[in-house]
Image 1: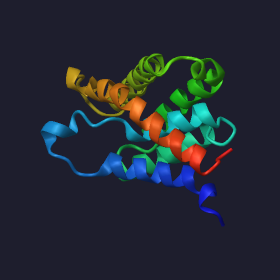
Image 2: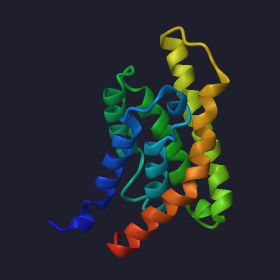
Image 3: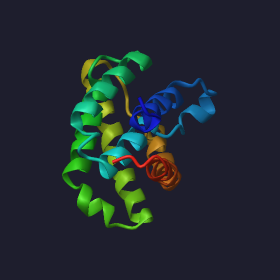
Length: 158
């Protein structure tokens, strides 16, 4: 089997690893949503290969890795990837900085849905620091976009 058939899977696995790597608490609150960024790129670039079904499965894996209630990340990723796949042709035409703001908005949606579901299931209070990953995800989008686009072109992934 050729490596080019595994690039999408390997990039998602790398994002899952980056999502669970231990970090100091002062830095951890700024951790970008790596899985959301990688899924967002592939959903915009190849919506026929990375869609809501892939987001559901990756979300379940993320729930298991993070030890959260099963289905929280899965539902949030499905919701954001659905919005991306439904509008991928429009989002492709925007500049990279406009895409960053769209990714920031969807990242805010992702984190607020996770908070809302955790608040319903447990007694979690909202803190503003909960939204720091929105800003860092927005700032990381141009680099993630450039890296994954280079991989997609280099390995001719269609």
